Amino acid sequence: MSEIVALARGWIGTPYLHQGSLRGTGCDCLGLIRGLWREIHGTEPAFPPPYTTDWSEPQGEERLWAAAARHLVPVADAAPGDVLLFRMRAGAVAKHLGLLSAPDRFIHAYERHGVVESPLSAPWARRIVARFAFPRPVPRIPE
Image (cartoon, rainbow, N blue to C red; front, top):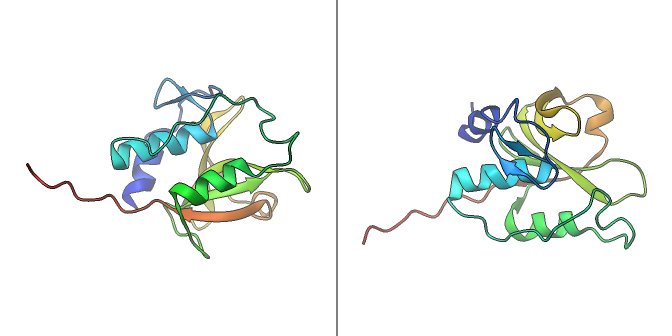
């Protein structure tokens, strides 16, 4: 099992909290990925501005996709431990994230459910618009 998947499974049961990113306390889908980033890398590369549940929809801007492309590594085929970006309905901006935990399962924070591991069923799989890997941590040089 991927080390990242093991870390993500440690978040299961965390309550849903819009804009949250703390394991056991609360997070949303972006907060889950931000929290995993901190567990892997120690600090976040950037902090998102405050956002609403319909963020970037009025403008039709793919802000989440652009941010993921800036900080994560795009991959053609996802493997366990990789980040999945979903478009929740046709014509809408992509704004849901999850972590592939097995070829047929993913971990995500879902409103009214918190962090759960769900089957990557056909309805979920067809909503995937991009796949990303976490960059490898840079080894720290002792002082």
